[in-house]
Amino acid sequence: MSDQKYEAANFEWWDSEPKLSLFQAVELALGREPSFVGNDPARLAGRAASLRERIKAEVEPIDPGRTVAYLDVTGRRVEDIDPNTIMYSRDSLRQWAEAAGKRESMPAFFPEDRQEVKAMREDEDRDLLAMFGLALNIIREQGDPRLETDSGLTGRLAQEAQRLGDRSGLGSTSLANKISQALAEVEARKKG
Image (cartoon, rainbow, N blue to C red; front, side, top):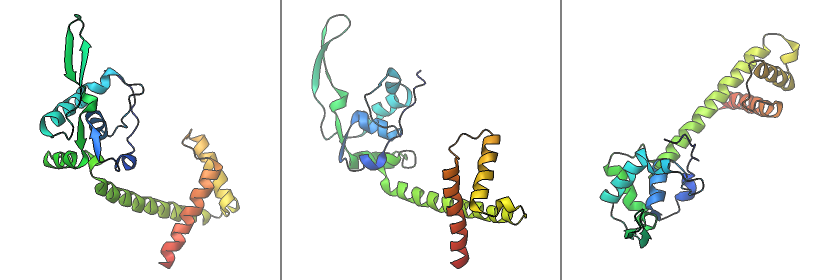
């Protein structure tokens, strides 16, 4: 089994595609960006293989694919359907996922569900900003004159992040922006 990392699917880009190949449908259903670059056998193993067989058996294709001919390992000519040419409509994949009880685990076919989750995350982000802003106000009330300004808070938070070995991008500019956003969120909640 490969430990290759897959790129997360850009669902918004794929939402405009009315039909998907079998390969694209499987990759999107698994939350992975369909790509043949760096393709390895692990892509065809495990869940992907199982899902591929289920889609082939349970979803009616809009294009059954093209036949290709090749020589097998014994040198015998074999004709088979190229699975990358089998095409499915987005609507039929959506209906199948719904009927199979996979709506939550296959967001690729349900953009409206992703919008709800995105809205919930935005609300959670605003709540976290407000909590951060309240904590900053408490810190300022401690009486340390170095922490009375946004730049003083930024410097102190950057020092603490560095002391703790935080390498998550909490540089001075990022912290200054978050401090401004957090304090603005607290002020907005006071007014509203």
